[in-house]
Image (tube, rainbow, N blue to C red; front, side, top):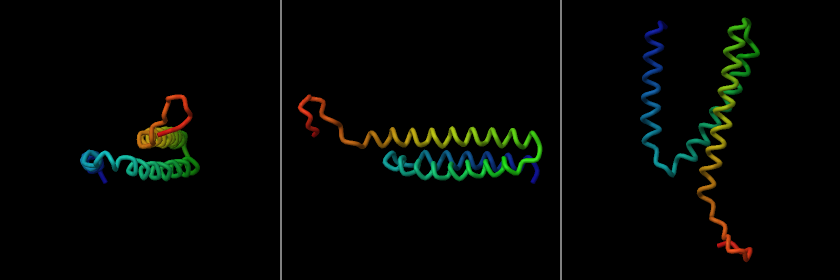
Length: 101
């Protein structure tokens, strides 16, 4: 494939991804993010495998950058999912009598 075809596919993928995610209702964001976190885990494993098979310093550097970015993406996704799930937990009563509503 030539570079123009690859760039065209990338631009179309970004557009379609944005349109799909923007149409998701707010009640479905948490399950969607959980699925995305699982995909990011697979991407992280793939980046580790690529790093293991790299032959040049450039390949190793790029694969290590991919590992770092995939790790940040996955951990950040779990943090955001956890914060979103906290919104659905019942609030604790802070009246001091030890009972919750």
